[in-house]
Image 1 (spheres, helix red, strand yellow):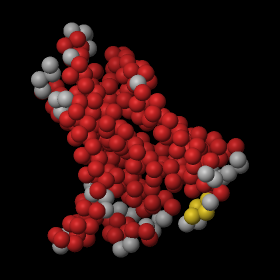
Image 2 (tube, rainbow, N blue to C red):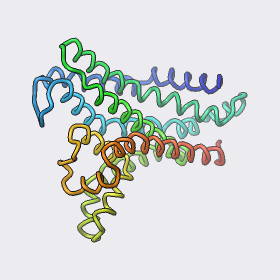
Image 3 (cartoon, rainbow, N blue to C red):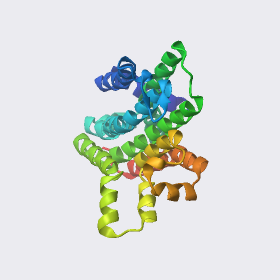
Length: 275
């Protein structure tokens, strides 16, 4: 455990010195500041005002930005160390491969999750200072959704990083995965439904295997419990999951998918040719 924590801390300190972390932090902090500066707390959309409206907008923007940031920065961890020849140095130290791999996983998770959480905390603090009502139920669910989404794409990034031999290949694969999941939310699924004649239940099942779609639908459900915005597909989701069941699915499925991907990456990493 001590070596794992030291490895995680080494990865954290390395990330804190890098430029990508500064940009990453400024992006999410800037989103919150921009939402307040533009006066979004005074707007009213779909019955949501004040801090609730800010949180809804923040979560929607985060869904597009967080995955690609996590993927691109994570895929370079194992592949980059392989290119830099760090493995030879690592193997000379009394540190197990499992400790090194999972230590980097823990350290990178803290680095990518905390700025997002702190930015949301900044928004809540601003709301408290302005005397706005705090929607604690939404805040709790949003915190869990962001935790699960970050864990999901971190695990996928570690898997890609373990498979790729170079950083360039790893980054290219990360972008392809992100674009594929993004397009599969609506565009590709619509084409499958129209051209393939697939039953709506099958299309929805495929959609709910996409962690981005799961995250998006769950955030919609918090301000639209009947999922009116989704149209007829809402009946399939609510009939099979129910309101609480789907929120639990959105909390646990992406996280479990990320852990499974990270575990698969570790097995491949351990069996592969490290140098």
